[in-house]
Amino acid sequence: MAVTSPQDRNARVGALLARVALGDQAAFAEFYEVTSSHLYGVALRILRDGPAAEEILQEAYVNVWHHAASYEAAKSQPMTWLTSIVRNRCLDQLRRREIDTISLTPDDDDAAAYDPPSDAMTPGEMLLAGAAARSVRDCVETLDAGPRQAIALAFYQGLSHAELATHLRQPLGTVKSWVRRGLERLKSCLDRAGFGRDA
Amino acid sequence: MNLSRPDRLARLDALAASYALGTMPARARARLAHVARTDTVVAATIRTWEQRLSPFAEAAPPITPPPRVWKRIALRLGLDAVRPSERGPWWSRLGLWRGLAVASFVAVAALGTTLWMQQQRADEPIVVVLAGQDARPALLATLDRNSRVMTVKTVGGAPVPADRALELWMLPEGAPPRSLGVLPASGVGRVTLPALPDVAFANVPALAVSLEQSGGSTTGAPQGPVLYTGRVERFY
Image (cartoon, rainbow over all chains, first blue to last red; front, side):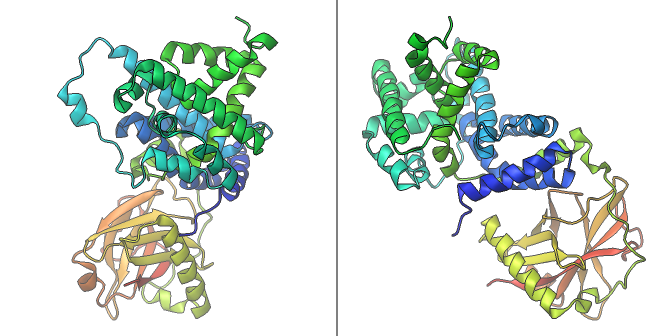
């Protein structure tokens, strides 16, 4: 199925944001139509909690309505800006939640409440799918399986170092170094390919 | 710690990476976000990492949020207070859809198919694109052949005033319109058919939407103007 390219979507979202900044309600409704399922997917994968993800989305859109004018097109792509707002709010909440519950022993209730979205793709496959551009894909493929999976799980599902260690059955030090070195390698490779410079 | 000093840049880059990826623990996150509010070098380093990782964010499959999310946003921001452009006197209740030019129908059907493809709802092969006289789609109704529950999504059209409501009608051949219920002012609504679609739509070539008092028509027939009409299309 033909999917709108990230460039097309960014252009459309950017144009809508400009109208939202002027208080255009129809543009805001369209902006929601175009962006909400992407952002909800991002939030739901990280929080694994529908109501919490809905709450984050509501806050994000209310904020966009009030502060659309503060978006600076020169500094970041609109979808990156939006995704970062939502991801950062989700991660803040997730990491705080871990502090709040750190003294509790994990129990079966938590396991029952865990309801990850039934994605057709694994995080590792998403990482590769994101590498639609040949050069980005080459960069992902330079990563070994372990670091690649660690980065994908952290990025898409918000796993902490400790959770990665448990999930991947590796010592904490190993996953930390996988993530650190994997990111360094991605950075130098992507930067060589011309990605990741200021938008 | 001044993270912007040259000798700290490598450290800052690692911190920004960990922040953007999400592995950074809560307290460090809060500290770095706080610093980034006033330190433009820190803010730019985080942004560059977010941009670097953005192709990967694009790839995650979208998940449609429940309709209540938009409803709550619209409610909190008071977005329903806009008045639509005034419509003329009300049009004939029956057979209105027949009055539209064939060309409009073709255009609307093509648009509808595109919209429908965008929904990625291949499991809902019955599609009705409800459009106004300008042939621009306002509502998109989709339905599974084996379900009585029809999804109706706002894709355009004029905003609905707070004291009015949109009501959806079946337009049976040779019979008066039959109400399918009141739709939400925006976002996604669901209406239940009296029977499975093959039966319920057997003699119903088209649907219409009228503008009514809140709560809908009180007489069982459209009382307000008919805003949108659309032909029932079957993709199976």
